[in-house]
Image (cartoon, rainbow, N blue to C red; front, top):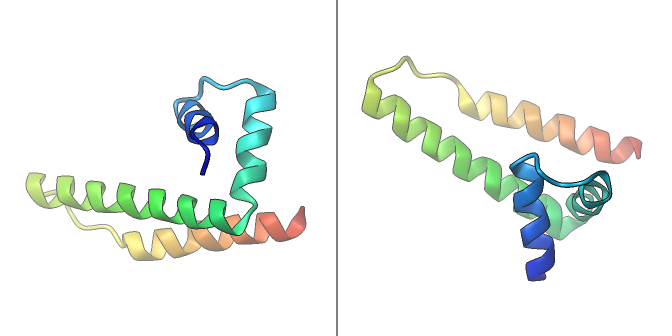
Length: 81
């Protein structure tokens, strides 16, 4: 992945990109490489959330189910376009 795309993805995640930049990021996420990266980012976030939950003793949430649901919604959205 080119550094420019990585930079745009970070801007997208920070909600600081322009409409045009967001379109570039979404087009990238529509590729197999982009879908893989998006899945990895979600996995990383889930791991961090689970660490915080176990550290703070908060009740466990079924993140695997949530992740599967999110992934299904993302994939169905890409199929619609």
